[in-house]
Image 1: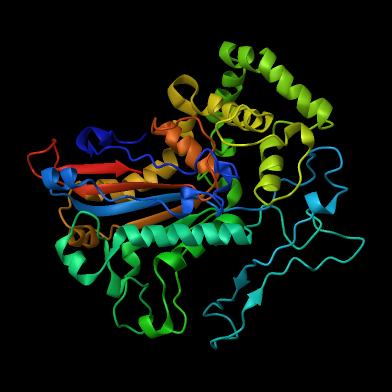
Image 2 (image 1 turned 120 degrees about the horizontal axis):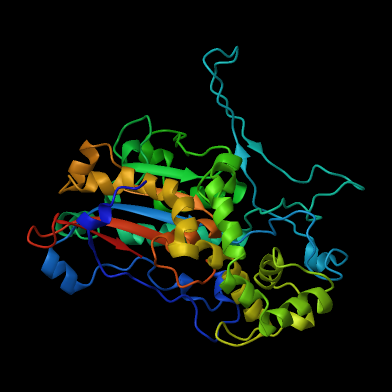
Length: 439
């Protein structure tokens, strides 16, 4: 059970940022470079001048939770619509992005030298008649080039939000966590940089989340040999077995979640909605017009197609804007509803249980140390990170917002970003002289 820390923290105004305009050629879900404010608007805006003037806030920490960037379809052997698998322009994905790995011999290894070998993971190892699930050189759920660009942009946005020039760093405590001249990860060679206790990196063990978080980190803290004094800087990236990871709603590790999910789907409101004429009509389009598609994969099928300029069936090819009443948008809305009907059931009990480990991690690492800190030096003295990054999924961001009672019921787009900041504020404001802000 999480301690009731919100009773001793002042909540600053929630910052809700627009993504794309109604005339955008791509759905908000895509976070596409073409016509999306994702690329232009500050994702973590500074506090208002009136807030700074009245509270004299000192920023103590920031915890960033992201969804991975654009990817290939995640499920194997699924059915999208008639003809999907037979048409290479729809179903075959080839990738330029890849993971590069190196080895780390133990002290007991017969080989103890420093290797300069790097291994590139290449999904072109199968030859006809064998083939990958997606037909080409991408694997299931792989981060694609568009996703690389999105997470690079997220890193740039976080750097703009929390890294300041020397003069501003000394003058503005309300937003600066790191000094620009020192905003790189410290190596073994000395010469400054960010100590490893000042940052924390966490993600589940999936290629798209690992790569998204690491690309964001490279853009947030550009680190070179010249700066760090080291040819390679080793960075701890905290992860675990995906089957046991609670960074997403993981029913396997909590039977109560399965019970709540079952009860939510058997509730009167749920049954009335899925049996309503509108949803029966939508389901008929999937089963009849598309040849037997299902709600488990409907959203993923249409979004991985549209976001990558691939063709979709005429029956759902009617998107004009995120505000229209197209079949495309109605499918998106219903797919979202199916998730949030479970997340928000019984005062969001499912979401709160599912996200308790993640929120508890943020609470322990960042919020609780902030209650006894007045400066960034105080945070460092407790070995509390000034910045923590959690790289997850849409099914990380959405239930987390439901658990915090901040969700509007919308599906989290690619490269979604949520930040939780803690502040030391004027002593006469609130009960603890601390505040937090969620963006």
